[in-house]
Length: 287
Image 1: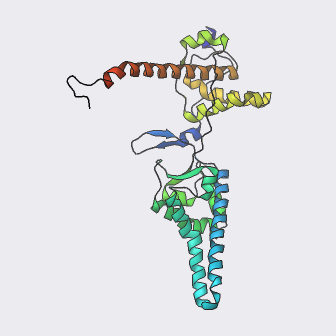
Image 2: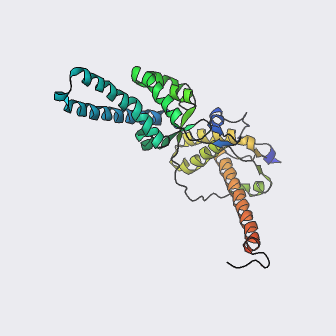
Image 3: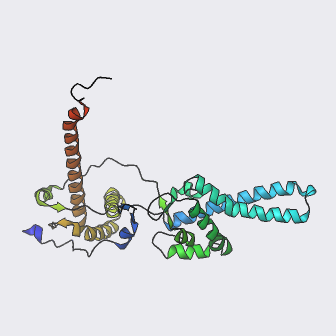
C-alpha cells in the first residue's frame, strides 16, 4: 500500500532533549509538563526587581537623612548599612515568601519561583536565593548569574541550583476554538491510523505552527513543518505519503477526534450513573 511507504516524512530518532527537560516529576512520581521561564523573561524580571530594591534603598536613605541633625555620623553609617541589608536581602525574602514565589518583576512577566518538583517554594528557598544573589547579582553586576543561567535548560541561576528551585512561566494563552478537519485525501487513512499521545511541548508546537502558518513565508513554513513532522512521525503508524503540513494537520485532527470521542464516552457513562448516584437508599429519610 502507498500509505506504508511514505516518501516525504522520515522517521525521527526520538523526542527533543528540551522536551524531556520540561518534565517535572512530583513526589508521587507523576511527570508534569511545565514551561520554565526563559532567559529573557528572567533577565527582565531581575531588572525590575533590582529597580524596586534600589527604590526601597533610596526611600530608607531619605528617611535616615531626615534625622541627620539628631544622629551622629557613626549612627548614620550603621543605619545606612542596615538600609542596604533591608533593601537587597530582607525585602526580596519577605516579598517572595508573602507572594508565594512571586516578586514585582516576576508578576510583570508572569513567572513564579517553585521547587524542582513543582511544589511551592518556602522561606528557606527564598533565603538561599537572596543570599546567593548578593554575590552573583550585586557583587558581579549580574554577570555570574547570566553565565550560569545560559548554561542550563531552565535558566537557573546559582541561587536556584542551591535552593532546588526554578522560575515557572504561568501565563497560558487563551484557548481558541479548534476547527481542525481531516484532509479529504486522508479520510481512509484516518480509519486505520494509530496516533499515540504526543508530548505536551511537541503538541503545543504543532498547534502553534498550524495556527500561524498563514502568516509564515513559504520557506519558513516548509522548514518548520518538516522538522515537526520528523518529530511527530514516531508517534504515528502508518505514515501517509503526503507533505509535512498536511501530515501535521491530519495528526492534529485525528487526536482531536479521539479526544472528543473520549469525552463524549465519559459524559454518557456519567449520565447513566447519575440516577443511581442521586437516588436515596430504600427507607432513607428525606431530610
